[in-house]
Image (cartoon, rainbow, N blue to C red; front, side):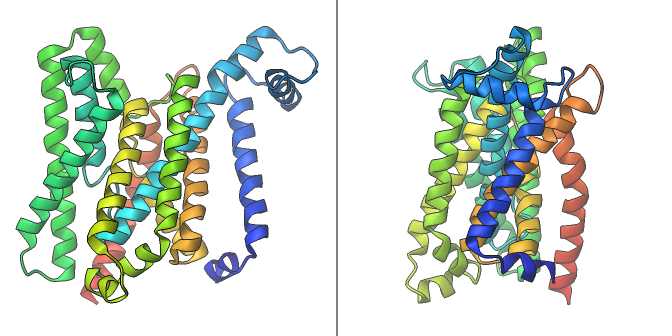
Length: 351
């Protein structure tokens, strides 16, 4: 089996393989585009910016690489890590293979919170876009959890999964409608156009100040999630089973849900809502490395970052002279994957 083969790799070998894949993805992200930059020039620019001697590079290529492509690639890496790990956490805590920040409405809630700050001035200047997005994400999760609990009652596991999925759809539509209402009521034409493009997922505006926020948050969130890998293993068997193992489930869920909401909020405030990363990547990594979260969490973080870097390259190259919203590319991959997982999950419960 492929999963057994990859899951059996020694940790040192796995780290080297993962690092090599990441370097290749970053190299492609820096070199590929309307202006192709050779690898030797990329290396020279990196050395110059690090303060070492290196051959001079065309100033235009230098600016494109350092001010545009490198921060964009780093943001894609941080964004992919954050969204993929959020999917891992939600799928374990909610015991639902279809759980994902986008599908459960967290991204929609975060978008509403960010737009409320940007257009309505919510928070009277004391609240950043990320702060507003965090509040919106938490409100969305609370609404979806409440609605799912009201709908499922004493239902079976299959019906409970369906109730959660439908509650997520309802929550996402509600917060999308609130966002549209805010835009229609208070935004001018230029603001509305920019926000609608941003809401489809867009890395075009990524710059170094965004890196200084996204990377620390992604790394801190990853550390918090990895520190709870045993609790996540236990929670996949249910709250009662986890409590019998000595896990303080209420505390764990509060910490991990808050961490997931924070990761989603920071990313959405910078790039808009990017769907299906948290759905596709964790399932692919479970196939490769198994279900144990000690291996699954770092593998998913790496794969999520690589996946979004490659998706961004496709978004930049698919239509010559035009950059697609990255959310379009991830949806083209994620929607079929969602359908496959939905069918397999339904068959498993019915069987």
